[in-house]
Image 1: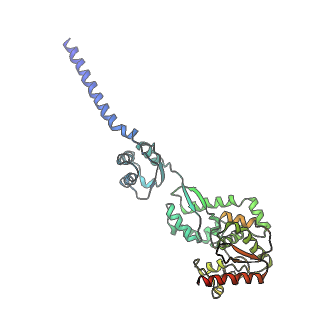
Image 2: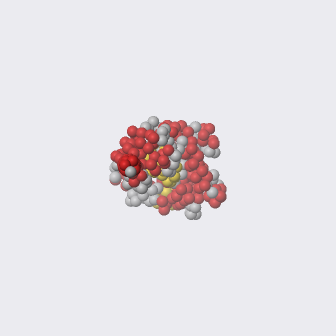
Length: 343
């Protein structure tokens, strides 16, 4: 009887120990299960990042406990962060285990890569470096490489035509060539059979349409004028009249801040100077928007050959088919430039 009592007491003691250990374990494990990020965070795992750096990154958005536990789980799983470069979205309801699992399994979240009002491919390269895990030198080198350009059916002057301003979803760690491949795919989708046929009807290639669209877009900040300006230049091209587009002179000089084109500027030697050379320049003078491209493709018919900024500085232009009327429009505009002391 005494032995039974001793055995019973031992069982109770063992059970108590088990329960205590279980309680301790539960108290230790629970935070890994029930502690959540509380906010939506995009974690960028960069080259050379270690657990401490990741913890520091998370602490900027989440609680210290969540950050430390996520780093610990990754450490227990022996995850090599240098092989997990990318952007990972941590949701508000994710616990440390879920957050660590995403990184371990390379479950990246696409990021939004946006570029719009850009003129030069160097500016595009800088924008890519700012938003993605790549250096501007890498992608700028590709955009200037003849072999790379040829792979897309372009040359270093026209390669920017595949860079259609928009917002795209890509992986943050996409390599430079992978990014160009992706953008080229969108470019091919944009230039569908209908747009290609419209370009052909104008007697232009898609590249030439984008060159013209880039000039149109530089000529006016008023989108409702794009079509009218495009047709004016198409009229000039059809008649063999030089485009005489001031923005091409600014591009040739390399200074878009110029507010007044002088006679000396019109003599600058460059294939982009449309005062000296008939027809379109060899490449676009900016990244033409889809809106400007479609304005060229759908340009309404008219007989205008001349345009001059309105003297009220509204941003709109006076259009005419008469050279004498154009000169009168130009005199009014020049007089207003003088009145405002714009050199």
